[in-house]
Amino acid sequence: MLLLVCFLLSSSRLSAEGFPGDWAQLEPGFSFQVFDSPVKSRLGDSRITVLKIDPEKFDFEIYCASQYNNKLRTVKEWSQDFNLVAAINAGMFAKDYLTSVGFLKSGDHVNNPTVNHSYNCVFACGPLEDGLPAARIIDRQCENFPDLRKKYRSFVQGIRMISCHQKNVWEQQPNQWSIAALGFDKGGNILFIHCRSPYTVHDFINILLKLPLEIRNAMYLEGGPPASLYYSLQGLQNELAGSYETDFLLNNNNQISWQIPNVIGVKKKSGN
Image (cartoon, rainbow, N blue to C red):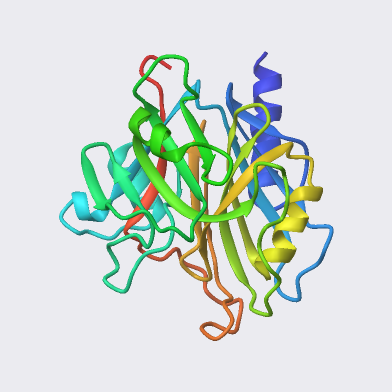
């Protein structure tokens, strides 16, 4: 057993450093894999990191700077301050560096009460009724969001990337950037997705659809340097930062995670 544990941790460290392989399970319900993109970017290593997290085994919560003295934090700082095992951007934010551009609610705290009618995906967590998925992505074009809005505590609204019919719904555009995204697979797992190498979002969606993710639907979280992902579990720690963004940062030189106002965080369940 000790030999097996050592082997798994060794394999996990290799993948965390950017070497693709099989899913590395850090704990039951929490795995990751680094994929080589079948389409190469013109910058960077063209690798895509995906965390696969079972919401029946881990809790998801939303954290907002507007709820905590307006203090911005990196994904690592959010994780350390709130005892999280993973964190990713909770959508894009306005010029005040606090307010989400879509509907954003964390329990009793409301960061942005307005539903953006051009954004057709909503991440929901904290069910208020038995029998509901502990976390999910709601497609506003396929599901009754006004009804589901009454049944969860917390929400992050974003731009739909993959519809409930597993279709790419993002029009092709010339701009490229690093990408942080959120997925929901057919097994009910939440996927934290990060790619530092720049792609158009349309092309990146097509890549995700080709990967063995069994992805059901997906929503866009952030692009360029602010696109961030952090996880720390079983002695393995990794922090991923974005860089290139058309018309903003035309290189792959950014090496640090930016401080951001809102994150989706993952915690171990009590007693786990």
